Image (cartoon, rainbow, N blue to C red; front, side):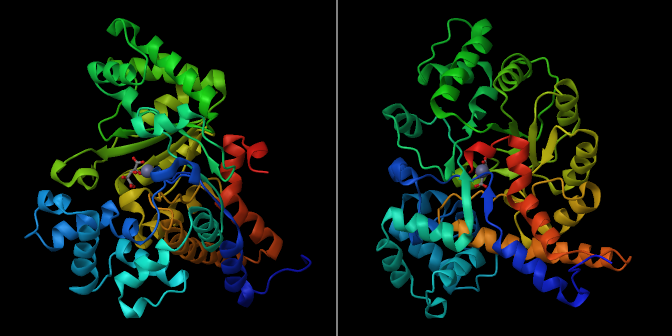
Length: 420
Ligand code: RAT
Ligand code: ZN
């Protein structure tokens, strides 16, 4: 008999506590440390002006056209969203509930429905104390940023020589290298790497990647790709992947994070909120993993319909790590389904979630909501294992939670020395 085996009746409490208390390493966000100045979005107005809520507002109140909405000053945009989504109807969507979970975690009076009071509270926090409190409330130890050297504002920060915050790990994001040849050339030129001929694009891109990897010291290279992405492919995008990205990742020992399935700008009038989802071909992921067994791939797919295929592919390729419930999948009902499916097909060898927080404070609700689902699903799986006569200890459950919430990523990305 196993010493200190958990009694089945104590199982739920132990699992919930383990998942709640294990600090998360959040592998994909859009938040930044204090030194990045205005790039670090935080506080009530930014929470309300999240693009998920903008899409919901334009839908709930079509009498204000997107152009009219974006023409409003930011405080008026906030008031309009608050009124439309929180006062004129009940805030039941995941993104609305998230705002309330966050306010409540900060100890604010959610029932008072007092936007101005909430704004005043967040305005009173300095960036340093704000970051500290959010990391504490969310129980997050580190976040991985999205660092785009093609973005002029972000590039300027890096070129000035920004002070590092070890809690924020860099990831080099290069969607712009996978566009049409002219747009790749224009993007490289704008970033200071003029392209002499289209034939030289891959070489120029490689020099660009080396320069930025030296400057940022990223923990992975990342890109989002449209739902029609294929590999191999007789196109610049195909050559870029085979002749530039793969050798770069291989030689520098950096994993490649692929986020596939976006249909960009199906409604450009909505700006950042105008993207949609499309089912992709997992064949491309399998071809990449088979052709480059020495490169590690972190993969998240946007379409619900692709999730089962991705799990099956991951069973075939140890260099493929599925991660997160991305964007439109980051809803409790789908997190539950995906996490169950992954546990059943992959055991504990996946990364169940990332937050994709665009606003610092979103770490609080995204992790609170996801942790609750992960704990519940784990409990159900452990329970069915205990029914066979197997026994589990508290330490084993803590070990498993640690793998899911941080360890699997740390090991796969080989960043033990960066996270202490
Ligand atoms: O989830 C989001 O906010 C999306 O707009 C994107 O950020 C997506 O996660 C991406 O990184 O492209
Ligand atoms: Zn993202």
